[in-house]
Length: 399
Ligand SMILES: C[S@@+](CC[C@H](N)C(=O)[O-])C[C@H]1O[C@@H](n2cnc3c(N)ncnc32)[C@H](O)[C@@H]1O
Image (cartoon, rainbow, N blue to C red):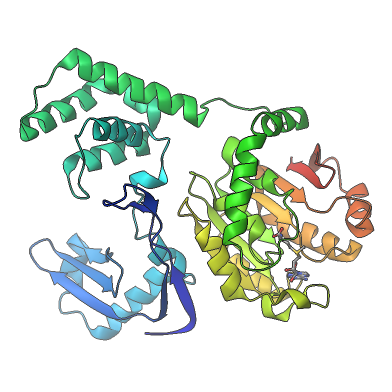
């Protein structure tokens, strides 16, 4: 299948066995999808394998397998089309399961690290890796409540490796990993108010500075400013799973969203190659922006970029189709900065925001009267003003 537009897939980070350092493999750029259909009568499944992608897509199985009988190529093609949907990039990207490296603060990763330090290492396919991933997926609280299950796994693993199993010591090590994970993940709930946001920022300034330095190295092109470090803070400390950005530019702001542990679903709209006179010198291209974000995407978040004018019906329709009724937890408006432009973006895209979801207006300052004046007419019965961050970001919550 020849693709209308190339798609870029980012394999998740892995540990280099030689250096023991976490490395992100280069992205895979696909112009064409080469399909191999795998029909397994024994397990009654038909899977689809795509070149270079190590995991396959289940097309149909069980009763449906029986019903399909001697299916035709046209039927297969139809099912593939349905499975890939409007956004094949996200579907294929999701074929990569999470790795331990993507969740450094997970209880399973911490436990695996503790064992590795005393020479008990896991291999990519061993059952201990599977169990560590399960611990990460279920979280510290689940591990605490199911410590006997974890003890069972460890006992079995010790037997396989012929290592003596001393239950009280094993229990102590597991509890330590759980405690550390809880501490690192800050399993606390934060109040959504500007004082709390500023307090987190001031306490962790060093951390935010370090990620700003790391991000900057990966951005090819101009960065407008770094006050959008706020996006990293909000997505890290508040319950955000999906993100929409109007005005992606070279991808710096979206990089703040994806440069962390939590896997999110991100959408971005920009004029890109068709940008207006203010940004023409920046030579923005959709592909370069995507590469910039991918380089910072340590969370393996799903990224979909839409090229178009945020005010056009086609762009809105395009996003509506891609979202397929899913809502957005955090919206950043940073596109057209005129009063009417911001108003149009706000009126359109806040419709996609979930109840209690957040909206950030960038450049809420005297330099951008369009943004500041628009903020004055926001309906306070529909949006609560949380406050202003670094004199530049207005944070609102949809009521
Ligand atoms: C200030 S930049 C965004 C910066 C970016 N959010 C960041 O912090 O890295 C504004 C972007 O909005 C885009 N833009 C302006 N008007 C737009 C419109 N009507 N529709 C879509 N994008 C627009 C421009 O192409 C430009 O890339």
